[in-house]
Length: 166
Image (cartoon, rainbow, N blue to C red; front, side, top):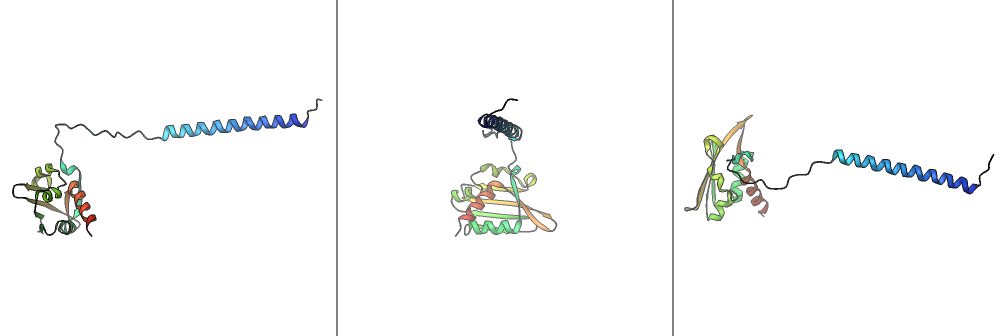
């Protein structure tokens, strides 16, 4: 029987530990690679779509709000330049002021003036020559609560104005 020295025995153990450590590191690396490869999400396309001749419905991007809340928020944001009234069927908004104020309500999106009450459940009439804006929003009732459907451009601008109030 051949006897090995303590140094040789330690060298053998150290090499085994090195090999096992290398194997563990390679195994962890492979698991991590496979995990990230199969769970990574596809990149998001950040390019803006090209304009097309298709007509889009501005209310495709809209929000519903309780009618009384909407009327109150508009009154708060645009007072003293606006009058808000409502009846059982609709909420009416009338704003008088300079062109900046009336285009501010629609967040500069003049396509909203193409909406009509029959097909979109709201109607916005922008009259720049008279510096007025008249808007009507149809009321829909769900479980006894009155809601109006509002284009997001109006909601965004209304929110900005309310946040800026003291």
